[in-house]
Length: 128
Image 1: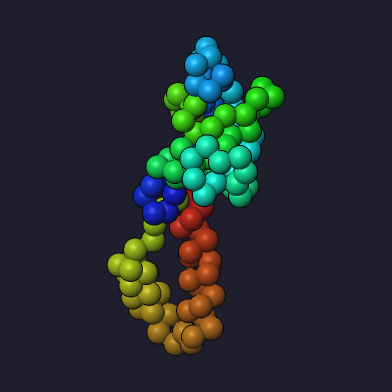
Image 2 (image 1 turned 90 degrees about the vertical axis):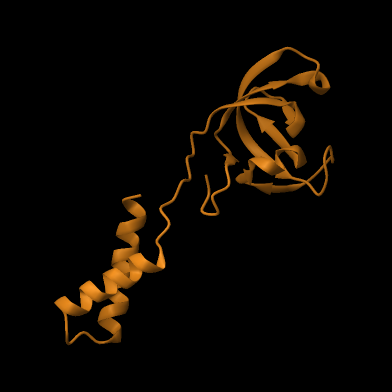
């Protein structure tokens, strides 16, 4: 899931798909490349590493078994190995941290505050 709250599919995701224009047997594969196209079943697109699931039908997927598939040939998303869920830091989180920092450091200048929030923000993202 990305920061906008939309579910995504990434390079590295395990899927099942049907070859032969969706009429072949179901096979398992891992996505090794994604191209996002302007429309469904287009021949070429823009390479991306992640795409919203709602846009899956506009994609061409390069698979690790030597095949490729249009988005409508993907049957199931089995496992997303590149989980990209990120913690969203809210305005309230920032306000609370600022109030705490200033109460602990009443003589802090703008540089001190900026340095603290750079470090704090990185810690928040690592502790998702």
